Amino acid sequence: MLEPFNTPTEYFFLTKRQHLETLDTEYFEALYTTKIDPWNFRDSTYEQSKYKRSIKALKGDCYRNCLELGCSIGIQTAMLSQISDQVLAIDISMTAINEAKASCSNLDNIEFKVADITKDFPAGMFDLITCCEIGYYLNPMDLSVLFKNIDEHLSPDGKLLLVHWTPFVPEYPLSGDEVHDNFAEKAKMLGGYEELSNERHDLYR
Ligand SMILES: C[S@@+](CC[C@H](N)C(=O)[O-])C[C@H]1O[C@@H](n2cnc3c(N)ncnc32)[C@H](O)[C@@H]1O
Image (cartoon, rainbow, N blue to C red):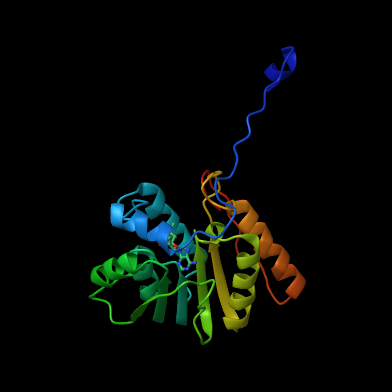
């Protein structure tokens, strides 16, 4: 730890963000048309262990209406469908939604919808809303609007699940910690929220 202080010069390397604006449909369509499982959700041990911990954080509760924001190809959706009467799963990418429909075709309590959460937040009230690995694709203004929408559509006894990749990604407008801190600050301002669980792991929180 002391090594940098024992040399005459100390160097800092800063990486600049490539995007400051919310990433759009074209960005995600290009990812999914190049590779249908761009983050390796199906096979990665990181993803599987993250999903397990996320479901565990929900403490075995069951939900009436779950809203999954950014459902991708439906891997976590299938798990949410096991603990919910009904799941509405939305994603900006039509290619991802088509794949999700195919992979969850045996599950009859899921509705999949193509929608941009910054422009077309679903109507209705939900007792579970999941916002996993999606907030950092938005700019700070869109993230604030997202939180307002989540707050308005989360039922009084509802739970909000937030999961974020924490390492810096130059392509993303925000980092996972920035997203989490923004949500935590707004929840404090609004009141009525209680933190039920808070975990930080090597690559996500
Ligand atoms: C990294 S994946 C996360 C998938 C899943 N939530 C998970 O945690 O495993 C992010 C997903 O969010 C979707 N997404 C990004 N911006 C969105 C937006 N504005 N509206 C809806 N979906 C969006 C992407 O298409 C992508 O499928």
